[in-house]
Length: 303
Image 1 (cartoon, rainbow, N blue to C red):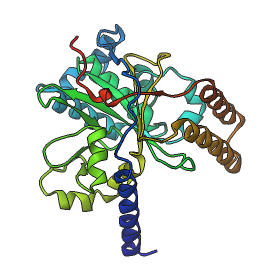
Image 2: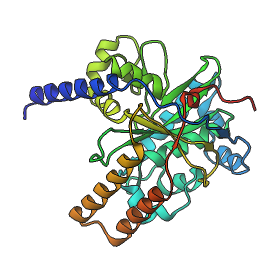
Image 3: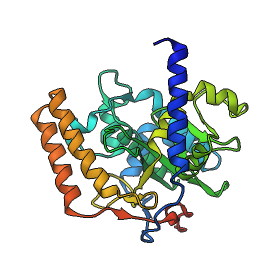
């Protein structure tokens, strides 16, 4: 396939995914799920001091500070998409452990969920409201998804998506926007990712330059999960789903898990990976997803 043919194929896929978003713009209004942000975890003082986070983040409002952290992390964390199915997954999932394992290493990588965990905790340690948001495709036969960080900027008065995998964010031309606003923009084929060393300026040029990432976001923005408790480490709190009206996310997740198990056998993954997939299946079967409402994107409660 030539570069021109590949570009035309990607453009067509982008249009298809954006069309799927456009046709599913109404969302289920589930429960008013409470969200919690913990800023005073004692480990955060260690994290700030060990990595000099205050100096890296600098001064200003929440988004510029968080963006500096994001762009410090992105080039220093190798990507390993199947990290969750490796033995390293048994390590504690917190910023201190994950940074100790992978920061600056060329032989150890992390997946997007772990990168977002690190950025979220770095932001929380500096008093910036932050949480992880999972971006998911419609198809149960797609085992790829993406996880990013959202921070709340009080000056802008909105949640802003930051992607520690790329060091970028998404815009419609007037600053960063949330995952939910990104989805709405993509449904209309508007906006673009903004990567390091790029300026918002010419959106048409950005859309062309960052077509691959725009396509990736469009594929993965069919439904979301939002952390209900953001703090140091991983607790037992459930993520809240935000899904299009009439979409059965439970059936989709069960079928997706079965498909992952099928691919694991096909690709010859080890027994440890198969056991983890089976545990995920058991957890999915045990309870229905917690479906939230649009209030998931309300301003965080004052501390």
